[in-house]
Image 1: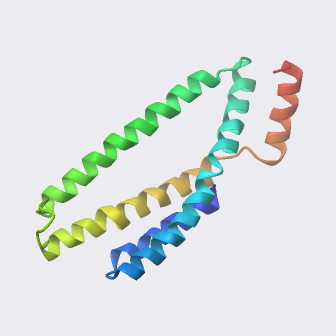
Image 2: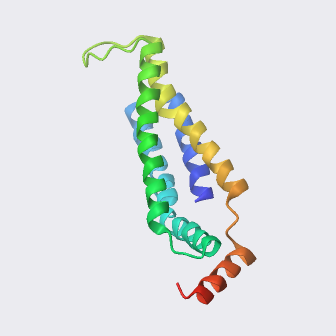
Length: 151
């Protein structure tokens, strides 16, 4: 998941400079592969967090954690809408599908398609890198505690 998030941040960055359809297809394809690597690890990481939470509290609390996760997924959608709206307003984007966008509006599109997602994904990578510690001895300890709790 850490490696996938780093690859996503790297793959999104060229979106600031692409100008042709084929460049877009290439970088979206590469970004999709990297994103797949990130997404496929959500399940195992969620299970690790659930296990640690269960050992810490002594009770299985998956529903609470699922609710918290859902809240933040939904909040992210709202945050995304706020970012898109703010960037479009600030760069005077014309929503008419036949309009020719100004250079400032084109940069706004690039900023919310590439720069902001890349920076936020890079932030997520650093959070995972520094705070995700469920590995090695700690993970072995948690697994043994779960066996003792018989959960």
